[in-house]
Length: 433
Image 1 (cartoon, rainbow, N blue to C red):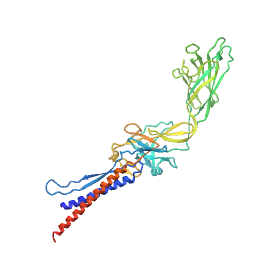
Image 2: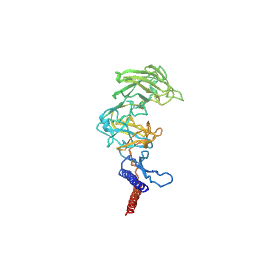
Image 3: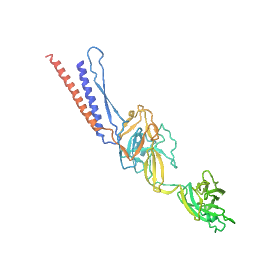
Image 4: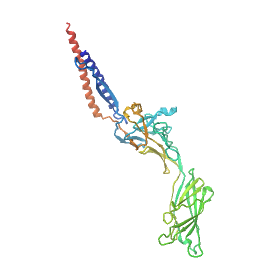
């Protein structure tokens, strides 16, 4: 029985070391595979003999574990949608075949890196057939509230490279100097005209035409102007009329002293602006605060638009897409605007090593890994997302080759045990002769 147990222990040793060699060969074969997580083989002794009496060898068992929580070094690339996770967390992806089949929501898989590029349908896809998943943004670029303990809200990130986009103008700021000499009793009273372009809800160029009419007094200087705003999109209809009075004191000369509303939205002295209604909706026009020189002023004898700023943009073509460290996918247009179109979360689990390993460096949550949660990248326990980067394999070839030498020696030693047992059995057989 003791000799037989020695034979069995030797056979178990051969099998365990063969298993370790398989994991080593897999690690070395994937030493250049981006995102590969090495496999580690552990040995566990089997104890069968009870205390006292003859000893029965139990042998050895081997178990393997993929170390998914280990992170490889990041390397830079030239592709904006090459993504890698720096720190804890995994990227949600799906099989491109499932996405194209369109049979309901594709199953969420997890990975730590990927080289994503748009395919024929605009999906951000890797060469191995993985599609990046994210939460779609609303038309205004905000991300709705999605459930964080399920993948139901995730959609394949699809980029329409032929997409047009424009933003309507909703705010406009005026920095204009009016000639103080035009409000004198001897002035000619010429009206000063100013036309400012804005963009409507369809990206069409329109204009607000502003006229400044000085109020001429019988004697002295009135320091007053009538400002009239007209909207070209409304057939040049008047959308606001205001009486501007300027200060002529030594301390605050040239700044606005008061604004009286004749028609249109009321002037708000706290914000220095009024809200008027153009053809496409409300627009906030800032003319400056009372007593300050940041808006409309009245100085000297020249009319000068000093600074005019506004938001909005005309219709433009999408030129590129990038993912920021917080997972927001931004589309850039040739008009200079940027729009958020998706948010890619990072998925975290209590035991990442308990996930089921699949092809293409992807993993599937399991009961052993625990329930997952979708975090905003850079928040909670998760790290951030690095674009223009890939994660290299966690395999250390030098260590693997060292382990290979140890495994080879252990395998040879177990083979020697089997050979020795065979010789002992042969001696036992020879006793009968």
